[in-house]
Length: 339
Image (cartoon, rainbow, N blue to C red; front, side, top):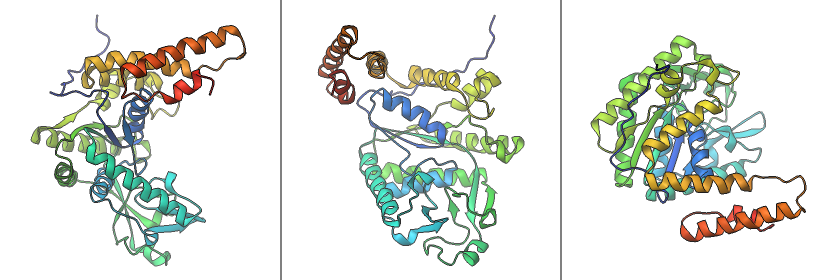
C-alpha cells in the first residue's frame, strides 16, 4: 500500500558532474541546496547579493553580474547608523560605508567572473510579492540614493519604516517578461549556461495563507512558461516534493513555515538522483565520509586511538585528492595532519 504520492521528475539531457561550476541564487532554500553541494566539494557560488525572494530582484542581480555593475557610495543609504543597499541582503550592511561598498563590489566582480564560466545556474524563487520605494521615502529621507527612482523595486527592506514601501503582487506576465529578458542576457554572456528553476517550499505566511498560495502559483506558472519555451531551462519540483509528497507538518520546523532537516534531505536526495550523474553520486559518498570524519572532535585528542583515526583518514583523503585532482580537500587534510 502506498502512503504518499510520487512525482515523475524529468531528468535533463545533461546532468551535473563534479567539475561543473554551479551558481545558485534566490531564496533561503537556495542555500540549503548550495550549502550541501559546497560541503561535498562541488565548485559553487551562491547568492552573491545575499538571499533574494522575488523574481524582479533575482533578475536585476543577475543582469548586474552580466554587466559587472560597480556600485558607488551614492547607491548606499544610512539607517540606524548602518549603511545598506536596497539591492542586497543585510549581510552586506556595514557601519562603515566604505567597507560595505567594498564587500558589495568584491562580490559583484566574483559573480561576474564565475558566471562567465558557469555550467549551471540554480534559481530558487520564493515570492511574487515585490516591494517598491514610495514617494514618502523620498520626502522623509533627504539622502535618498540618486540611483533609486520612485517606485523602484527593492530586494530587502532592511526593517525600514513600512510607509516607505508599496507591496505589490507581480502579475504572471510581468514575471515571465522579467525572466525572459534576463535569460537572453545570460545566454548572450554565457552561451553554455544551463538553468534549473525551483520554487521554494518555504511558506510566506506573513503574506497570508491565501496570498502565499497565489504568489507561489504565479511563480510556478511563469517558470513553466519559460521551461516549455527554451531548451536549456529545467524545473526541479522542490515545492511539490514538500507540499504534495511529504505534505505533513512533521516535516516543518517549529514555525510551521520552514522545511526541517528531514524534508530538506529528502529534497536533496531527489535532486541528486535526477540532476547529478552516476559517477559523481558515487564520489559524493566518498567525499561525505571524509567531510564527516573531519568534523569529529575528540574528547581525548592525545590518545593513540585518535591519532590512528587521523592517520587513517589523512591517507584516505590524500588518495581521494590524488585520484580526483579537481577536489579541494585542503581543509580536511590539514585537520587530519594536525595542522
